[in-house]
Image (cartoon, rainbow, N blue to C red; front, side, top):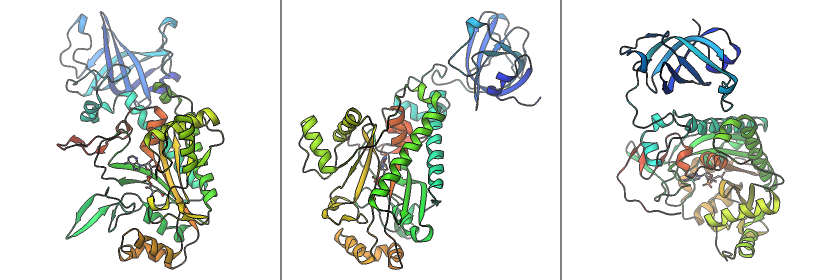
Length: 457
Ligand code: AMO
């Protein structure tokens, strides 16, 4: 018989259906056995009685253990009748809560080994390292899976908005001959007989593509050799990047703020059930406040009593406090901070023509953490060559990149959203590792590595 997806059983009351899926839980109640069965569309309760025919189930013991050896994560094919549940047994928490299947036959298609922990509860009560050690299994739990349905919603809305803005989607290399963001946090790799780097961001390539497409976007991996363990840093990050030709500093901020709002709106509309599972608060976004770094540091001093006015960046505590302030004063979960010191930014960042000590750069903070950064870029060839030199690098290492500027580059700029940080903040996760399917950090590449770790906040 043709397969019926579990969610579609809602329209098949009184009919015989065939469902395929995984056993989520089994509950033995004397002469009746309840199975929760899960497929890609959802979960349904299946009632097994003594009349149910068990195919491929070898150890069918009588009475108490109806269903014999059926156990969680077994892959099954079940044929049965869809019935309305008695009113007092309706489960309002699931979309199939008003129905159940009375099983006529069950076949085990793939038997699961005994599980290392209970996967039947509404949450997986495991420490993060255990959750990650058993990733293939823990991802199957509906509450963990929900994180990656939110990820999917963010990715697809980012893509849609960028397409509407006239950006061409590009795929760029992650192996490069030079580093992009500066600093020591770069992975060196052996590339045949040469040295190369894993890209810290798609930065140079997206800029090189502006004279080709004018507006581009990419969703790509970026690598950061962070030699410490924090709750907000990964060694492999998913970045959602844009680059726009013929745009001013203010237009760039308008654009990324509208993309952020569109993504959040889309997630709030499309992923209500997943957000509810995490008790995620509704996200508020009126007009997003914009402060320069120095203005933001004034707020920190006035409202929170910390004098960081000489610092070249925000501290993690500053980010949290500024977000609290933006919520209280402006009813916004977002806040933009601009004009970071030029000396502290990568070589491609445009100094502010009004005061070159500061740059035309911005960060977007969301619910206590930076989720995006970017800038207006230096688009003049000679100025860029000088900037590379003043950052202690050799323009010869940037030959291909500089070529794009030598032959006609309009005023341009862009930005990059960190996907995992967005998910973490939307769902209120305690650790960014929960927001990556297979997170990489200093102590883990799927399996735990044996390393000395520095901890930082
Ligand atoms: P930046 O280095 O600020 O800027 O990165 C952009 C965004 O990527 C995310 N991010 C990270 N997330 C988790 N772990 C990390 N180690 C990590 N590093 C970065 C953050 C951050 O805001 N090329 C510029 C962007 C541009 O100018 O267009 C860049 O990479 O959310």
